[in-house]
Image (cartoon, rainbow, N blue to C red):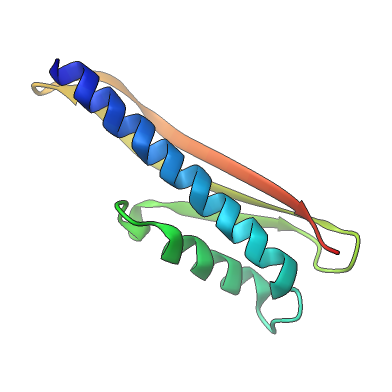
Length: 102
């Protein structure tokens, strides 16, 4: 039963990373007029994290900021799946979202 709970928590964190990447990508569409669009997108990603410590998440923003360019927002964080102190899985949870600047 404990393994199921721990696995559910891992899935929850992955969904939260995906949602934060999506929010960052949405913000990228309007952030192109911002003087520091990459920083603005990263700030949006940090603000979208509800239960995850933002300092544990790595965010990268790639692409161009001109009309017609695409911007990709990638998030990742290390995660260990432990059941009663026994490590079952370890690695990085990752998510990405891409938008076209209109």
